[in-house]
Amino acid sequence: MNITNAVFYKSVSTPSGLPDETFPEIVFVGRSNVGKSTLLNSLTGIRGLAKTSSTPGKTRLINYFRINGELYFVDLPGYGYAAVGKQEKARWGNLLEAYIQSRRSIALVLLLIDSRHPAMVSDRDMADFLEFHGRPYGVIMTKDDKLTQKERSAALRTMESFSAKAKFIVNYSSFSGKGKAQLLAHFEHSIG
Ligand SMILES: Nc1nc2c(ncn2[C@@H]2O[C@H](COP(=O)(O)OP(=O)(O)OP(=O)(O)O)[C@@H](O)[C@H]2O)c(=O)[nH]1
Ligand SMILES: [Mg+2]
Image 1: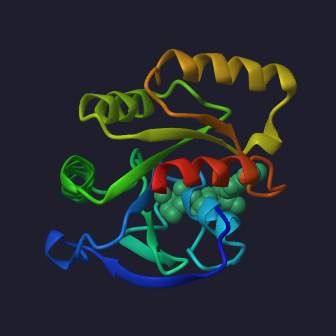
Image 2 (image 1 turned 90 degrees about the horizontal axis):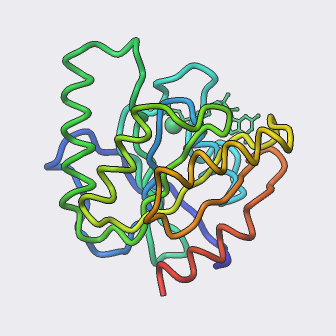
């Protein structure tokens, strides 16, 4: 897939604000600070389209981006961010789960995993959740530029062991662009 046009569409904080399920969606899911918003910017080639931050918890809303006028990229807030209050965590956890379970227009979930910490419980839980609900998903191993070859192979093996139904696993660096062409090719299959 070639991304020729990407624009911010809207931010949503409650189920009632969700847009109609008119376009297929590629949904970005992962722990806070794993690099979801940065990946979105890397794929579209527009720095600053999605807000990024070195402090976790930057994205607090569901953000929709229209891609090529024919699909949405959906940037979701991260899970596993300790400094968020219990109440907000619970509220957000429910919204995230409900979204993944019931949103019919999801064409593909991108599960982002920090290459340096590939076996975190919350990530395993998310992979289980996606598999249980039969959602099509692919894995992005983020921040690949921080790894040695040895660490890369070990991380890949770990990830493969708990994402049996993943359609693909891609090593990605938003800084170098490594993995971008490969990932865009996978999108082609998901969107049709
Ligand atoms: N080295 C390196 N750092 C990255 C990469 N991608 C993202 N980062 C850094 O990771 C931090 C978090 O990036 P974000 O894209 O804001 O993370 P997020 O997953 O959207 O975080 P939340 O919105 O809090 O859930 C930033 O400091 C980014 O610069 C990458 O490929 N390599
Ligand atoms: Mg973000």
